[in-house]
Amino acid sequence: MAKADSQAAVLFDLDGTLTNPFLGISNCIRHAMEKMGRLAPDDTTIRAHIGPPLQVTFRVLLDTDDEARIWEAVAHYRERYQSVGKFENELIPGIKEVLAHCVASGRFLSVATSKMEAYSKDIIAHFGLGGFFDAVHGSAPDGTNANKADLIRHIMASEPIEAANAVMIGDRLHDVAGGKANDVPTIGVLWGFGDRAELVAAGAVEIVGEPAELAAAIDAVLSPAAV
Image (cartoon, rainbow, N blue to C red):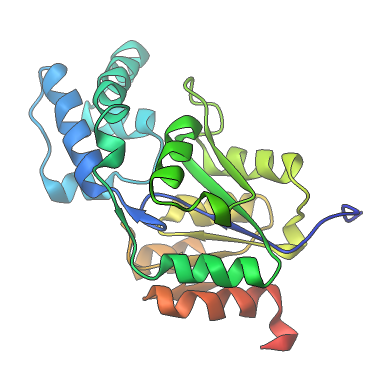
């Protein structure tokens, strides 16, 4: 049964979708790896690991299943990120216009990110995006809701929205997989950290190359008869 007060909803990933966080994330990953006594990875390696939860990234970069070491690296990362790294970040040009279009269309907007929710709220406020969003959802310090499927399930249960009238926007396969796990279609964007092949293979319903194309793609998914 549909929620009585549900409305069309757009869920936005943060890193690589709303902002370009590469400088801050790469600096903090290097900081953490050096603290762990390991060589810092190069930019190409780091780019490939932006998107999944931090504990997944450090499991790979440290080549370990030792949970204590993984979470030690996460702590080193957060040590720098919370004070400096989260603001070594750039707003994607044109994204405010997309958000304004969604608001003007009467849609419910939520951030849906694997990043810690507290950091995400700071970043949204820093870039003056708070007025566009009805909600900001991210992960907890212990990793709860870092998995996109869990996160989107949590959002669907917490907010006045339903899968049949929602769309996820993201740049990585994890966004698409999280949406599919909750019957929410995903529009992939190519200005982030994933490529077209990744998004196609994951099952994105649409892929756009520029922010200027995104509003129309959202309209097409949420109101296909009107486009």
